Image (tube, rainbow, N blue to C red):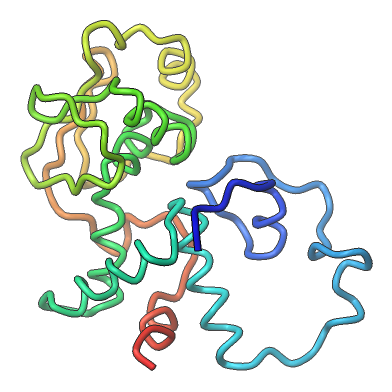
Length: 202
């Protein structure tokens, strides 16, 4: 399944707040569908609850099903809790770090900055959004990209996802340093990662 490119608020209405996908909130409080799902209400199965939690991660971070499954497999081979490892790996993606550092309003916007070659890691251009940032890496904007209108507006307004504790940001110099690994408290998404692990472990 490819990356979702449809209406973002539709996913927010069905899954709840997705801060990485959009900062907007739906005006309607009913689930998507002609009748707001009132004819389909029934007791949710365990599988459905697990699927919803998994979809929250997919759509919030803009991942394909194949990508998320790869992160899960890698998380299972790491020490510690698989769910925490999974979220840590995804939080370390370059597009997420750029967004969390305040250079973009959302992860899709940050992905565009990276894909268009505006971002460097340790002085070298990296245009791969899935690049995993390591502790000590310095992420910055290229010299010709530092005064991009979209970046200036976002830094001035401070309307991004929120700077986590594992990042050190110098807005004026357009630099971000990853000073540690993300912890569970650094994840802004309301998700039960244990249910995601259960979904994939079947």
